Each structure stands twice: as structure tokens, then as C-alpha cells.
Image (cartoon, rainbow, N blue to C red; front, side, top):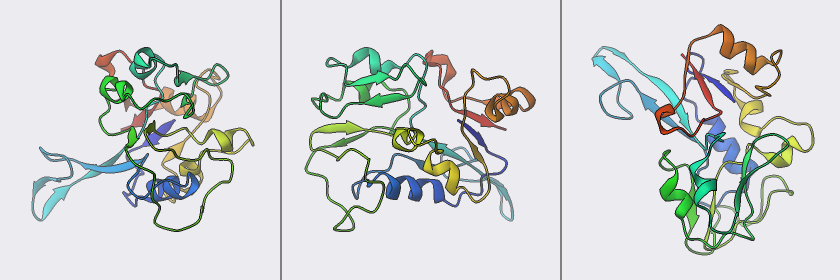
Length: 202
């Protein structure tokens, strides 16, 4: 995935679309939009009225060398061979939360400590999304249920600023490969050695 920080307008459409598409419980957010710029998160840089801020999304980085996979005692978290997406089998998850502790990207995994509660009494997203379960950990899946139909993840299709792109980095002709070749970018915490597959164009 490639996210263009210069195009992102901080509208949170990606976060809301993710929540609806995946029938997320009331307290769960697999995708967040954070304001960056100042010394602390969610603060601008500069002095009023000359302030600047930009936005960065926080979600699973679908790493090539994910710490979460290494520590999972039941292999509930794994990398899909066909596309490298880091995914989870809720049926195997025992709720130990080792993956949460191992992941350097704070807040991208959610633990359902109790039976999930919803803002609306009926599912509003895709019927092929696995049911959310008590005592399990969950996170962004890159909308694998949509990928199976040849569709893009919901956050990609819904972005009004066209700041998000999804594709195959192994294909040099793909849009994501071309963008990363042409533009400067950053990755979150590359020093952790997890090999994140999300690139932020700067």
C-alpha cells in the first residue's frame, strides 16, 4: 500500500469506511488518522496564524518480517503465501495478546475482551467478513474478502483525495511500484526490522 501524505486531507473517510465494511465493533478502529507536525502527536507546527499540519494513517503495516507472526503460539497470525498479507485466524486465536506486545506499531491491533457490541443492531458491511469474537485479537486485513473478488480494499476506493494506492510491489509496472520509484517516501519504524509494506509518500 502507498499513501500520499501530500494528498491526504485528514477527512477520516478511510477509517469510517473500514469500520463499516468490516462490521467493526463500537470500540474498534483498524485504521486511524493522526495529525503530525508539532512536537506532540495531533498538534500543528508553527505559531498561529502560521501553522502547518499533515496527516498519517495508523493501521497494520503488513510487514514482510512481522514480529506478531513470530510470537503467536497457535499460528493464528500468519502471512498469506499468495500475496504477503498478514492475516489472522480468529478460530485459532487464544487471546494471549503476545502479538500486541510484539508489534512495534502501537494501537494497530484490537483485543476484544468482551462480547463485541455494535453501534447498530445489524451488520452493515460485507457479509463475507468473519464474525468478531470475544477474547480474540483483530486488525486490518487489507480487506482480503474484497481482494478475493478482484476489488481493492475499501479504504482505497473510498478516499476522496485519491491519496491511497494498493497493488503488487513485485510487479515493477504496478502503480505502487512506480510511485515508490518516482517519489521520496518514509516507512514507519524501519529500524525495527519488520519490513513494513506500507509506504508514505512525502
